[in-house]
Length: 131
Image 1 (cartoon, helix red, strand yellow):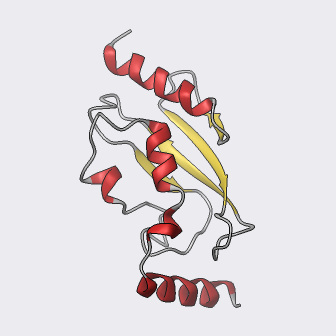
Image 2 (spheres, one colour):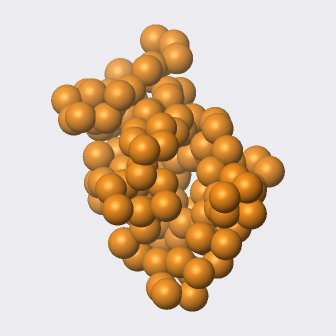
Image 3 (cartoon, one colour):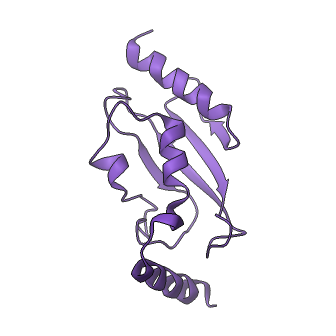
């Protein structure tokens, strides 16, 4: 087993030991789904979302690909494709990150939004959800 394969396997095993619901798609451990609930006291509280994750052959030297399977309205997520725009995933990726770190930092995204983002987010969510 090559070094990237060992790292992918180790990171995925660590993720499986967390409270996240993880469903591995196939035996090569390059694709999986992660399910999580919306953060408490946020617009997303009570929601349940699924994320599709793809690990490239060169993981951890190349960043993973993350996209929401179901609709979510947020300034850092493409409304049509579900792709995530976060810098940690795309531009500032480092092999120092592991899957648990990425999802622990990524999922509580509401805590990182400014008041302007919240206003945008709440209006967009309300408009889309007909609230």
